[in-house]
Image 1: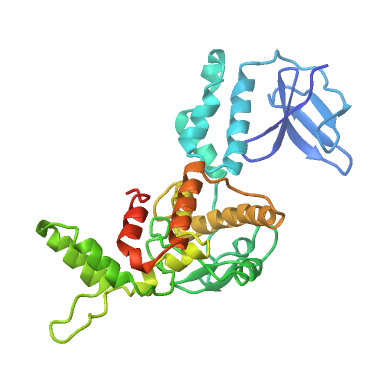
Image 2: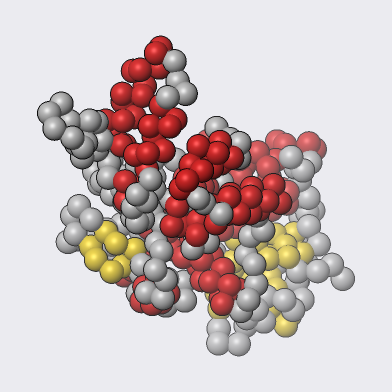
Length: 350
């Protein structure tokens, strides 16, 4: 006897396929489900258990032959609806993937493409903001039930959990980056900076490097000096404050402490996250849904790290580069500053 195959109707009701005949749910009781033939001129019926995996009463006789060409069309619609609920693939991508294996002999049974696309979109009815303009309760918690919204106002939403904050509290160095691509049009993004201690030889090092440039490079040198070093005062001695203080961009102490020199890892995550969001300036609902998924993945990564596992292995070339730079910085001697700068420059790639 052929197996029972479960299907779903356009309205989400249970259907089943058996021996190339299609049955729709007629009614149910506390103990069984009663199905009738999809052809309303046929009186064939069957009874199954509540899980639809076994007959309690086998199908009665049909008054017509089966229509096997109709089965692939129903199966395709069932497949695309199931796929739409578990993936963020574009609607057209889901449909085209499903059509790749569709039998050509049953092409005439397929609904129009627009109807199939609408079937997929109907499975993706997104939640909406509540009457007060706040996120719905479903989106305010992580997949594991922890509160995800630390603060929410018209212009600002802070996504984090108490567990995240407790982990951040254990570390001295925080890395941050800003992005606008995945933020809704009506909201803003905050850019943050990392602070490090001042190294007294910054100005001396700049003077050494500046002497190596030709006169044609005066404009970029002047810009760099004014922005990052501090231009010389026209009267008296000393320099004006630069646009960006040395403490904000100097990385000497970070290298000594074994801390990354930049926030490239955070920037890389932003790029990957933007790719997963898949559209620029999504709605706040879509952004929240994506953030919840990221949080679920982060929770796994954090657990692995705390258990001593390495979540992501760095490329060997970058490991060796960091080792060389750390070795040079550890052996720093201000009396040989020119040679030190030359050695470090040999390991910098633009």
